[in-house]
Length: 216
Ligand SMILES: Cc1ncc(COP(=O)(O)OP(=O)(O)O)c(N)n1
Ligand SMILES: Cc1nc(C(=O)O)sc1CCOP(=O)(O)O
Ligand SMILES: [Mg+2]
Image (cartoon, rainbow, N blue to C red; front, side, top):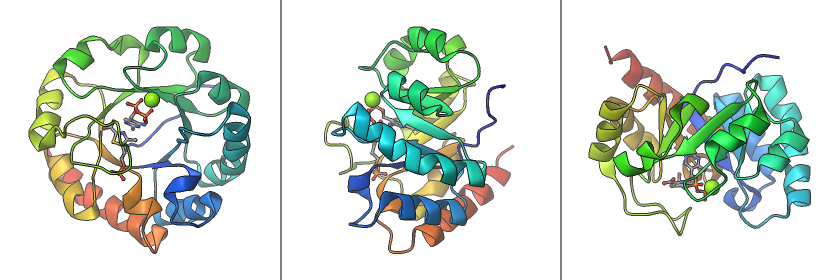
């Protein structure tokens, strides 16, 4: 096994509570049909046991779409599930230790909102950086102050690592996030809360593609 290739363009971050009363697996299936390029299972309330069951429902969908499945926060669940990767924040497990347990064949992402947080990231150990909240969000009550597009641009100047913007990103705002220097957009409500998750994913993907081809 080698590290899965991954595409940050349209990164769906999702849990059962983010799906407007629908089954999470149905929403994820629709998002994948529309072109979501990466999926993260994120449920802050679930037990590890329940998280594992949720992940087991997503694995076949993601495998069929050849889209990596990332687990939020929980290294042991990611390993038990055979997930493709793990996402850690500044207050989660330490990234270098996580890399040692994950091995070289899984994707590891971390969050960093500014230069001070980036300085704490062992860049050699990580594959991408989640940057946010770019805009105000109601999907993460403990998110800090929005860093804005200037915050994304500042992070771009500080590192060559792949960056994915997160927080309050809609289709209308995706272009600006890419133009500010992100390689992709991570969203909860823009897809999870959309009436048509496939259409939402498709529109985000088109917006990211158009904005990316405009970059040098
Ligand atoms: C792609 C991506 N970027 C950032 C985050 C946020 O991670 P974290 O700061 O650990 O917050 P929680 O998601 O754990 O509440 C993310 N999950 N994904
Ligand atoms: C999971 C998460 N992390 C954030 C960060 O800033 O690190 S913001 C966020 C929630 C993003 O949800 P929505 O797309 O609905 O705004
Ligand atoms: Mg976390």
